[in-house]
Length: 609
Image (tube, rainbow, N blue to C red):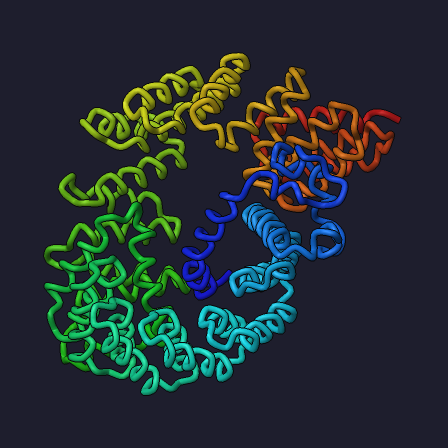
């Protein structure tokens, strides 16, 4: 779903929440009016959502036919049934099943013709790829409810996706006329007009929003961007400053900094850039806000041209801030060598800033010059806000180069600090694994958890290292401990279930654990593989094949899934197919122990007549 559709979802969310609250207040008995033939337990929610047998009869068939015919004549019962279908449809959408979610939401709307239900059904159809049906339904909804602005916005959104900009503009103008205080239709209309090249009209719409809502950061930031495109530098500065004053977000900070650059205040601009970057986690993230700004303004090539023309227009040399913006766009365009030339030039100034040194190191990484990257990163001092992020980059480079002693020494210098950050303990454990010291990795993971007890990821890492070290019982205990703390931790559920399958523990319990993981992440290839492997061990080859083929389709580069398909083929006496799967598995990226196991299995089968 694109960003504008996401905005539409946000508009609906309060109404959706209210509807769910109302529905949840209904007596349980009202939910027992479910599909024909379902037991009380099935429709009241005690059956696992992921259980195909419990769900298929609810999902399949004509939605209207699933409602008892003698109930259709009672308005109260129809509303109750509609709410039940609505909740089931929303659950299916959350699980990523837009097709069946659309069916249930359409059924809800057929039972209770509320605009909200109609809108949700349309959104589900769009998510399921039924765009033509969604468009027709949206047009019908607007005709049925001509005063419902949310329906008009949804219709405009679908028209936008279909490239019908003028029709979308008509709907949005109607919404603005009847509901002038809502920001979203203004933003969408400005986007349409800007795409069409009508920047003057787009600016009028943005200005209207600032008059209707003087405290709207969206309105002022749109004004600033449009002023940038029209070359109105002073007007851009006024608008950008207003947006930043109202809402000091990183995006508005970047916009304000650019406006300062355009108006000759490079020193203040650089200060604002660095303020905007204080919350960034890596050098790569430093550039995303800049790139996003220009993506909103226009295409990136045009942005490069604008940035190149600015120094000429004001009669100055390009400032550090402007050059950093050019570098960000060049990185987005994969023109890494050009970006490096600019960063190297900036680094040769009399007093290069630490932001320049950080970005220079990242530029060297992008062109595969790790030693130069390390030199650039080494000049960043502890006082710089991104010092820890730079430290992580240095450790990762050293680990990749196999310089594990240097990596561990650098890690220790951070770990000895009062509050280094949990990331350094994770890295320390990973470096220990790279050095083949699994017991040390376990110890470092446990030390990280003691230092940062709120980071339960260390419990998972400890269990993973224990399993790798052959301490299976300890690993299972760690995973069970994590599941107690976080019952919805799908990774732990799957890991524990898969270990139990591998080591011949209670296969039925393992199946339930993996199914719980799949309820949370229904389209995870690794989880589907685990469940398929479990069914293989249970002797249910048909279910195993179905799941394993789904898994390999979702994760086509996972060699272990191919190994499992090979074992399934062997069980069926299909030797050539098994050898083919094993060969494909070895072409993928595998852990050494998995590769060795599959290689032995392949050679064993090749020797057989």
